[in-house]
Length: 81
Image (cartoon, rainbow, N blue to C red; front, top):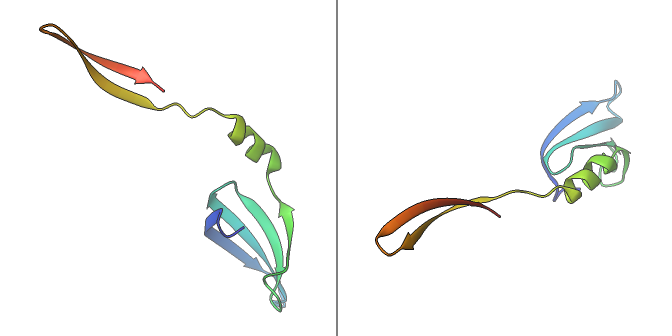
């Protein structure tokens, strides 16, 4: 979980025995329930697995700009990769 999350938010229970950890990114957001006695042991309440699948299937478009030279003529091309 730590490698996917570098931005967090937390909410503690009234007696400070448990806390909700809200992973806000840069990976897929998720919410987990932790005990303050043993924070390493946790239960995932929301994994956003459907969002994770959709992101994996999504193609990321990258544009690249190149100059095409033919004889004395130059043309700027924008290519999508």
